[in-house]
Structures are given as structure tokens and as C-alpha cells.
Length: 94
Image 1 (cartoon, rainbow, N blue to C red):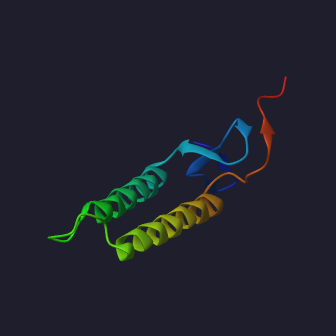
Image 2 (spheres, rainbow, N blue to C red; image 1 turned 90 degrees about the vertical axis):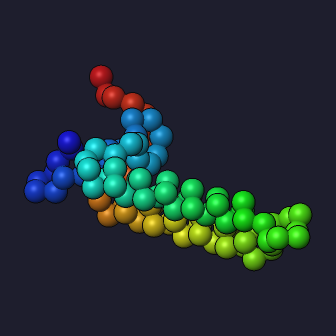
């Protein structure tokens, strides 16, 4: 686990590039798992086709997009709040 002072990071910064990698703590894994679960539930809305119809309703498509955007924003927020500070990284220094 990466620590800075008394703060334990849930997500480690990526070695190359900008952003975060996989979670480090159970809290990070829980938030990442919830993120994936919401995506799967949203995907189910695209599979629900009303009886007698051959296509997915427009409302379901719009809801799918809205849920995915909100879910991604929530994960980025949690990563900013509980992850290592993001910055551009070029790998380990020699």
C-alpha cells in the first residue's frame, strides 16, 4: 500500500502516463467493483426489448449513456479523492 503521512491511497498512480492503475486496498476494489456492476446493470437496459418490438427503445439508449457518464465521473472523483495525486509520469527514475 502506498502511504503519504497518515493517508493510505486506494489507487496507485500509473507508472507511465497520467491517471491511476488497479486498486491497492479493499476500499478501492469495492469502488471498482461497484463501477463494473453499474456498467453491467446499464448494459441490461440495452437487452430489454418490449414485447412486440424489434429494437431497443430510445429512452433505454439515453439512460444507458447517462448512467455510464455518471458512473465514470463517480469513479474519477473517488480516484482523485483517495488515489495518489495524478501527474504525467515517464516511468521509474534511474
